[in-house]
Amino acid sequence: MLLFILQGTNRMIPFAKITMMDRILYCCLIIVFLKNGIRDYKLLIAEDLIGKLISLFYAMYCCKDIVFRKISTFYLNFREMMSYIISMATGIYMDSTPSHMECTY
Image 1 (cartoon, rainbow, N blue to C red):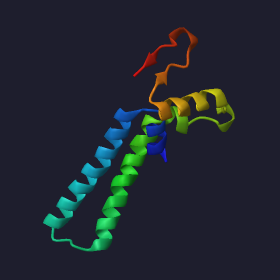
Image 2 (cartoon, rainbow, N blue to C red):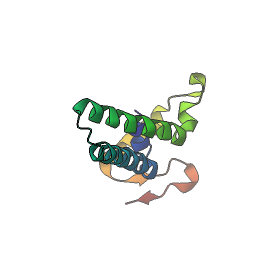
Image 3 (cartoon, rainbow, N blue to C red):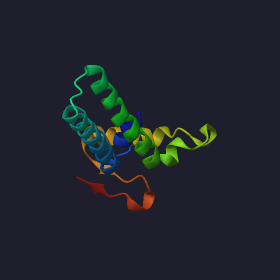
């Protein structure tokens, strides 16, 4: 879920780091287990879950401004939401602040 939030808020660098960390941890755990002669598929699934759990904690750290916030402080801004959806559909990105109403292509 946090990876979707990172993608949706255009935080691609933390998204890429978390995804790479997940896959690298999984590969390292597979190599360690295979070198030790462990070939049980259940443990391979457990390794994947361990890698995902560690990357989840890092994602929570990267999104701490969202994760560790009271629900009452969230609000819906339909105007900003619609402008973001339209800009994503058309490929024209506009900054939402009035002083920077420049289009970037």
